[in-house]
Length: 300
Picture 1 (cartoon, rainbow, N blue to C red):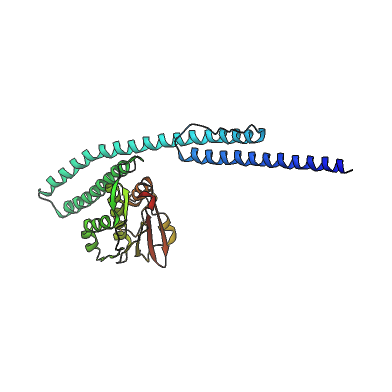
Picture 2: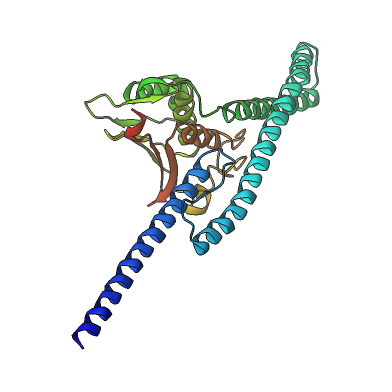
């Protein structure tokens, strides 16, 4: 009796050991699939998931994931190709429009020097206004296609966010003054350094501050934190959460904004921020727009 009990105990111990080993191998295979899948999603690679395990069920799982991964990779390549073609088309169209628009402006300047009746002056004023809007839109389209085509390998250099903010405010001082806006700026005593593209950063800050000039009720607060988070906030009672949520959409403009807006400024800011490894978002709270830009410490 004791002998059989010992045999049974030995068999149970063996089964437990085998099951433990099996579970360990399954966990290892699951981790391999998880790590490989995450890597394939974040890298531009056609390499599929490969397992060291011979387990039939885990290999079937890897096979199924690989099938879907192939579709995802193909879709991503088609999207990237289509996006590049669209940007090239926009760039070419914008460039082609510049020449005739410049000629139209030249002829308008010549007509201004001719004798005109009241109706002719009024019509010419309307035509010039529409032409200027077209020029602005064309220029913004060109800038958008150029700026958003910046690759991940954009040259970076040590940048002090404190100084970059001050420079951007100085550059747009005239527009702030015209909008009767005196910004309130809060910065830490320490210098917040990051490895970023200086020109792209200047464009981001400039576009965000320009957005504040368009939508502000007369105020602008800018706060820079030591962790690289910058918050731009201003009152905008005429807006709502839905409108603010769409501010980063291409070509979206709010009706209450000043005329001539193309709706590309914040879209460019978002594209450049994300290309440099940062994040940007907007929220609407108690009648205020808050735009948060964050360049984390790993960009040091």
